Image (cartoon, rainbow, N blue to C red; front, side):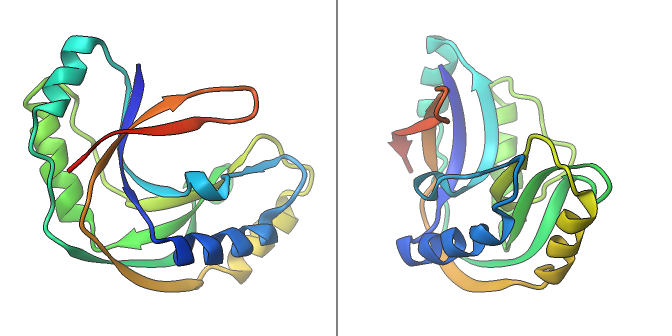
Length: 171
């Protein structure tokens, strides 16, 4: 089973981000569906039943934390863009804490933490300059903040139409 840990964002914020994504409706960019917008804490990949049970037995609850959703960024870098994202500030301590708990059951620790919300994946791009200009134009975008108080374990099923996410557990 393919799984990941995430923090959901409120519906009104999803709506705002969904409208904003239209700025990147460019041939070759696959925008994330509105219902799939989330902040990934850690992608765990394919796990067997034994590992899944270990994850389910962890206490991954978090204290309510203010999360600021702002600033546009890219992975791996601005010259080779594969992912377009919006930053999620205020979560690094939570990411580290959860990463620590997961490492105790055998998951490799992350080298660095860049909490973010993916809004699009670049498959190919005909006009790289146009994309860079749009990213620069919206670099300082600010969607405000919300209080994160739950962590969810999602099952991710890949389909030709895109991934289908299903909540397995909520802490």
